[in-house]
Length: 256
Image 1 (tube, rainbow, N blue to C red):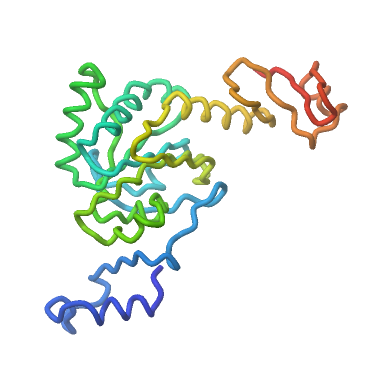
Image 2: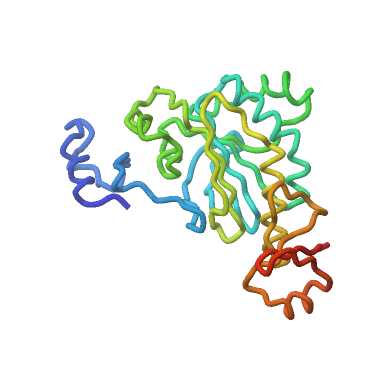
C-alpha cells in the first residue's frame, strides 16, 4: 500500500480536471515507482499478487497459481527477436511442464491486442502451427515489472515512461504452490534463456521437496542426489538405504 505522503503528492500533482470533490478518492489509482516503496522479492519471499489483463482474460495472479507450481517469465516488448524464440520454446515444452504440475505465464510491456498479433508470429515461426496455450500478461504500465524488480538500476529511471521499452525486463521466477519464490534468474537483452534449464530446475526443486535431498551440479532426473549434512549416517541409512560417502559432509544416494 502506498504511503499517505505519496498518495498526497499524487493528488497534489494531478490535474484539477481529474481530482474533483464530487468523485471519491477511491476511484483514482495511484502508482508509485519509488524504490523505497518497491517490494523486495527474494528467494523465500511471497510472490507479490496483482490483477491484470492477459491474452486469456483478466486474472488474479495468486488465484491463477492455485495449488500449482508456476513459472512467470518476462519480456521487454512484443515482436522482439530473442523473446519470440523463447516464447516458442516454452510453448513447445508446455506438455513437459504440465506433467510436473507447472503453470506457465509470460509477460510483455504492451497490450493484449499486440500480444495476440505477436502470438500469430510465434505459432508461424516457432511452434510449427501448434497452439500457443498459456497467457501473456499485458503490463503496459510496467506495474508488474516494478513489483518484481525486473529491471536494472539504470532502467528503473525509465519505468514511468508509458511507451518506453525497458530492454532488461527478462526475468524468470519459479513460484511454488504456497506462493513462495523458489528461484530467480535475470538475463540481459542479448542472451536467450535456456528452457531446458528451467525444466531441470523444476525437477530439482520438486525432488528436493519430496525426498529431503539436495542436487549436485548438472543434476538431472535419475542421477545421484546429495544427502544433506544435517542428516546423520544412521538416519541416512534408515531413510535412503545404501549411500556413497565421499567425505563426512558429501554423501550420495539414489532416489526414485
